[in-house]
Length: 145
Length: 175
Image 1 (cartoon, helix red, strand yellow):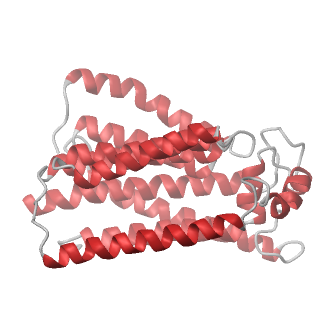
Image 2 (cartoon, rainbow over the protein chains, first blue to last red; image 1 turned 180 degrees about the vertical axis):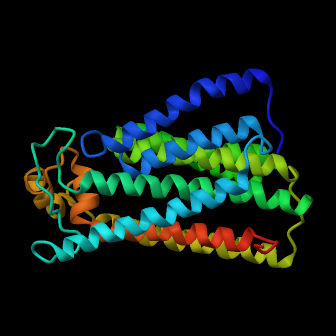
C-alpha cells in the first residue's frame, strides 16, 4: 500500500495523538461516563489505522508491529481471566467478584475492579482490531513479493 | 419519536436494498454505511448513548477497512441472469414473506407496549446497582459485574476471530 500526499501526512501527525488520548480518556472514564473498554479500544485502534493508511506500509516495519499486537492481545485477555479468577481466590469465592474497596461513586478511583476490567478489555479490543487490519495489509504484500 | 424511528428504519432498508443491487462495489460499501449510521441515530433517540458510541466507532472502522479492501481489489461485480432455479427462489421467498408477516402480525397482539415489559426484569439492576458495584455508569456496572460472563465471552469471541483471520490469511508459513 502506498502512502498519501504531504498534506495528509502532516494533518495525520497532528491528529493521531489526540485520537489516541481521547481513546485513553474513554477507557479510563468508562465507569463514570458513557463509553468503556470496547468503544475506547476501537478508538485506540483507529489512531493506528489512520497512521498506517496515511504513511503507507513501507514507513513502519509492520511485521514487527503485528507480532507485538498479537502478544498484547493475548496478554490482555489472560489478565481479564486472571482478574476474574482472583475474585474466586479472595473473599467470598465467586467468579467475577468485585473484591477491591468500592470508594465514592463518581470519583475517578472508585468501583473496585471495574476500571481494571475496562483497561484490559480496551487493550484487548484495540490490539485485536489492529491485528485484523495488519493481517489484511501484510499478507497481501507477502504474495506480491 | 416512533415516527422518526420508522423513517430512519425505512431509510436503512432502502440503503440495504441499494447495497445488494449496486454494480459498483464501492457505492455498495458506502450504502452499507447508511444502515450502521441510521442505527446510531436510532440508539440516540432511544436514549442509549453507550451503544451509540460503540456503534458509531465500530461502523467507522469497518467502513474504512472495507473501502481499503475494495480499492485494492476489483470494483466491478459479476452479473449473471437468473435461471429457472432463480425464479423458484423468488417465489419461495415471496411465500415466506407472506407467512412470516401473518405470524408476526399474530405475535404483535400478545406483546407488551414498547419499553414497558422489560423493566420487570431490569428493576433490581436499576435500583441497587450504584451501591452494589460503586460505578456511576450503570451500563459498566451491569456489563462487568452482574453480567461478567457475557463480557468474558465477547472478549473470547474477539480473540478467536483474530486467530481465525490470521490462520486463514497467512499463506507463507512462519520461518
